[in-house]
Length: 252
Length: 63
Picture 1: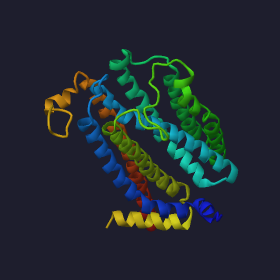
Picture 2: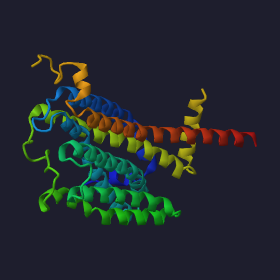
Picture 3: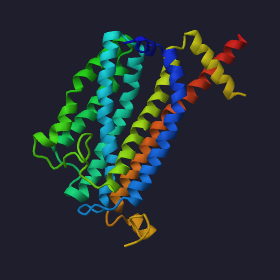
Picture 4: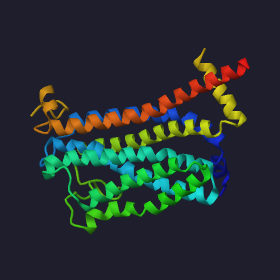
C-alpha cells in the first residue's frame, strides 16, 4: 500500500490546496440537503401516531446527536495521529473540531430536553443516556479549555490528544446506555444494519438530515482549519504569498 | 384527508403543529441559529484576520 497520501496529508500546504477545492462542494451539498430535509421533515412527513407533531424534533435531535458522538471519535483518532506521527494537521483538526462538537452536543441536549416535555412530562431527568450526553458536552469543554490554557503549541496538542483518547470511553456508554440501564430514552430509531423501525416517508428525510449535518460539519471544519493553517504557518513563504493574494483580491 | 403531499391542510395548522407548535419551533429556531453562528464565526474571523494582515502589509510597505 502506498502511504504517500498519508504523509502528504501532513503537509499544511497540500491540505490547504485540496480543502480549497472541496469546500464549495460541501457547502452546496449542506444547503441543499438541510433545506430538503427541513421541508420534508417539517411539512411532508406524516405525524407520529403516538407523539403527534412533536416527533418532528427527531429531524434535528438525531443528526445532532450522531454528529456530536462522531466528532468526538474523530477527536480521538486525530489525537492518536498527532501523538504517534506528530502530524501538525491532526492537531489543527482536533482543535478546530472540538467547538463544533460542543455545539452539536448542546443542540442534542437542548432539543432532547424540549422534546422531553411533551413526551415524558419533564425537561430533564437524570437518565443514563442524558447524563452520558451531558458528560460528552463537558469533555468537549475540557478539550477546548485545555487547548486554550496551554500556550506551548506542542504541549497543548499532547494534552488535548490524551484527553480526547481517554474521553472516548464515554461514546460506547452513550450508545449502549439504553440497553444497559432502564431508561426513559427510546432505543435507537435508526441503525446502519437493521431495517428502520419507522416508515420510509419518515426515515428518508431523517437520512437526508443526517447526511446534511455531516456535510455541514465538514464545511465548517474546513473553513476553521484553513484559517488556523494561515495563522500557524504565517511565517512560511507559501502562506505569505497566499495572504498577499487574498488581501489583494479584497482591495481590487 | 388532503390530497396534497403535505401533512397539513393549511398554513395555520402547519404553524400550530397539533398542540406542539411551541416545542417544535423553538427547537428548529435555536438549531438554525446555532448552525448560522457556526458558519458566521469562522467567516468573520477570516475577514478580521485578512484585514489585520492587509494593514500590516501596508504598514510594512511604508517603512
